[in-house]
Length: 302
Image 1 (cartoon, one colour):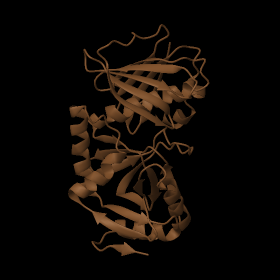
Image 2 (cartoon, one colour):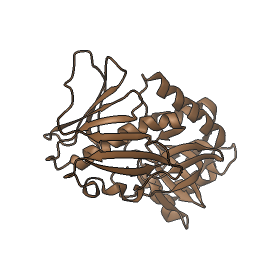
Image 3 (cartoon, helix red, strand yellow):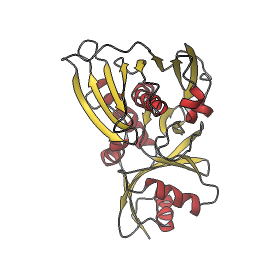
Image 4 (tube, helix red, strand yellow):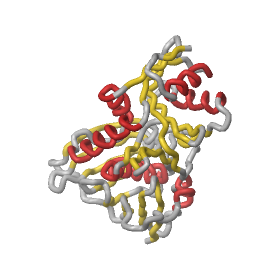
């Protein structure tokens, strides 16, 4: 078996694969994340691929969630004995089902990946994404469904339901503001630091190949909503928290993970401006959004 170390958002990910599984081919988006964390220590997430298969399902396993998205179809089960989890993942409608067993904090993982599947690499990446999104919650981190743009050395996060126009709005910033760059288009990682919230790029970026191993201070968060006019509405306290919450990766029924998420979100909304942007897909929306996040309690329109 071959062992590989990666670092995402300052946290180590260790992967153990059979010799025939070429990590460079399976995980091309992880290339810039290769290496151990600067501070050393134990990996936050450790995945071992097993060749002999995993224990079969039992009657006591409880189905918690079924999700269908760009990762394929994922089923999440809670195990009856140790509070751990089973993840079943199918990347294509007629493809095989890959299996992962995780401990209760998603830190120790065993995965049975069917290497003949042409989407085996996507399955491995998705398993790591699922596990990391839960494990990082206990390290003052949040895995977000958002687009992240960097402008003037600060990160701006755009959230919303699928199809709302996060990527479109991010592109408007790139076209409107000189020097603006895309940090991640789908799954940035937010972490608390001694100097305030920061945003990291990640090896998961949806359909856009944007895999930057970089960290930038967080400037603000916006939830997008399509509308005939551009209007920014500042949010605070509970309203701000509930605007961000739907885009956060967490198993709601896991009390420890949920408590950690709420604590981190409370710190974030106390530290940076949060707002709702009712918007058109145009440059005016980017200008209104930037002005709104720059401060002020009035409603901004264009």
